[in-house]
Amino acid sequence: MKVTKDDIIGDVLDADSNTASFFVEIGMHCLGCPASRGETIEEACNVHGTDPDLLVEQLNAYFASK
Image (cartoon, rainbow, N blue to C red; front, top):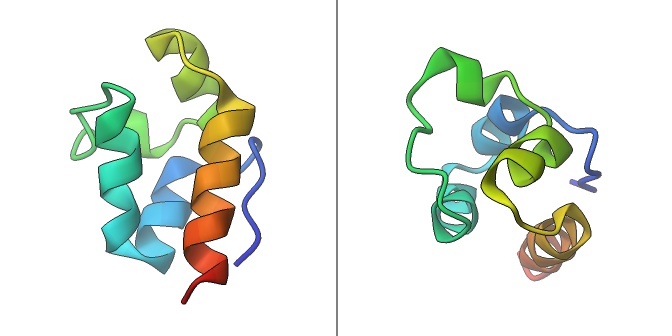
């Protein structure tokens, strides 16, 4: 899977539930909430004050290592 900051968080989690830890690390502890699963990576990063490009880079490195 190739992740972009426009991807929906729920889609990334559905592809691999182990990616939840990357979202928790940015302070997103509400992954069970339907609203958070419907946000894009960029939207979530903006809300939590983190860099979406860095999160995308980490997610893509994770998927590439599988």
